[in-house]
Length: 476
Ligand code: UTP
Image 1 (cartoon, rainbow, N blue to C red):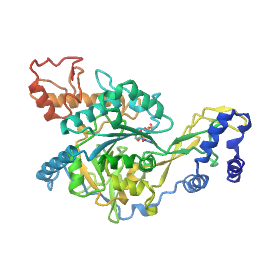
Image 2 (cartoon, protein in one colour):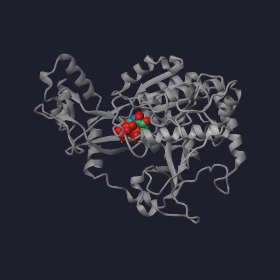
Image 3 (cartoon, rainbow, N blue to C red):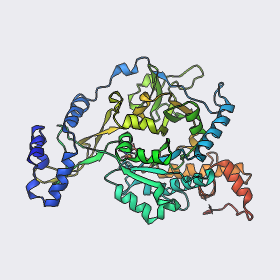
Image 4 (cartoon, rainbow, N blue to C red):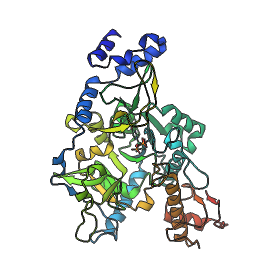
C-alpha cells in the first residue's frame, strides 16, 4: 500500500489518497484496486502530448490525402457492378448459415448528449411500442437466427459504469427471446479524467473519476475478456460491429459480409455520401496506400468543401460506424502483439463533477476535465485489404445522439416510420406519405415480422387476414 501511495506521490498524484485514512476498509480496498489499475506514466505522457502540447494537429497528415475509394451501390456510379452485389449477398448468406458471424454492439458509452439516466441501450425508440434499442437489436438477431437456421451469438461491450444495469435489463426481459448463453457481455477498459494541470480527478473521497476508454477500447477488451477465445470455440471468425444508438442498422447484412469475404478484408466499413459538406461524420480517406477515417474536425474547410468533376463533394464517403472485423485481426491489434499497431488516444474536454482535496464537491458548469479515448476506426490503417461499401442511409443509419434536433429520438422515430412506409408501399399497400416519406399516422413493424422490403412483402402476402394500416398498428 505504501508503495502505491509513494508511487502516486512521485508522479504528483498524491492527492488521490488525501482522504484515505477517513475511508472504511472496504472503501480503502476499492480505491487501492482502482489506483493499481492506472498506468501513471501513460497518463503523464498523454497529458504532455495531448493537453500541454495542445493536441497539436499534425499537418503532414493532410499531405497527399486522397478520398478513399468505395464500392458503389448499383446505379449510383458509372462503374457500379450489379452482378458483384448479387454474388456478395449469396456469399454472405452462406457465411451466416455456417455460423461464422457474430453480432457485436459497443454499449459502453456514457450518452451524455442524450442526457438519459441509465445505459443508452435501454432507451425506448420505436414509434408505437417504444421498444428499447437493445430489444430492437435482439429481435433483428433473433430474426437472422431463424432465417439462417443458426443461433447468432451476440457480444456486447459495456463499461464499469453501466455493466450491472445492462445485464439486469436483459435478465428482466428474459433476453428478449434470445438464448442467454448466446449473449456475451464484457466490460471495456477505463481511463482517469485529469484537470488542466494533469491531476487525476476524484469523483468521491475514495473514488477516482473514471471514464470508459472509447469504442477503440473494444479491440483490447475483446482479447482481455477472453471473448475472442469464446468466438474461436464457437467457430465465429467475423464480428459485425455496430453502435448502440442506431436502431436502423442491419445488424447482420449478408451483402456486406459477402464483400468482406470476397475481398479477403480484415476490416470492412460502410459509407454513405455526406448529406452536406459540414455534416459531422468522419470521412474515409487514403494516404500512402492506407485507408483511414479523418474526423470532420480535422479536415480543413478547403478539403471539406472541395468538389470533383461532377460537382460532387470530393471527400464525401461518410463513416457511419458500421464495420466487420476478422477475429484474427482483433487478436493481432487488441492483443498488443504488434507494437506498431497500437491505437492512439484522442482528447475530449468535458464537464466532470469532482471532490477536491478539502473534500468539497464541485459541479462544473463548463468543461473542466480531459478524458482520453481510443476510436475503433483508427484500426483501419493496420488492416489488410480494407473494403468500404456504399449503403443507403435510409436503410442503415439514424442514430440517437442528442436530446433534440439532429440525430434525436424524434428524427430516429421518423426515419423508422419512413422505412416501414417504404416497405408497405413496395408490397403494394395503398399508403399515402408526405413529400418526406412520412405516413399520416404512426405504426410499427417488428423485426420478427420483417426486417427488409422483400421479407415484408413475403410476410404481408402470407397474412390470411390483412389488417388495415391505421394509427397504432403493430405488425408482429
Ligand atoms: P458516442 O461517440 O456517441 O459516445 O459513442 P457516447 O458516450 O455514447 O455519447 P456522448 O458522446 O457521451 O453523448 C458511439 C458508440 O460507441 C460506444 C457508445 O456506447 C456508442 O454505441 N462507446 C463510446 C463505447 O462503447 N465506449 C466508449 O468508451 C465510448
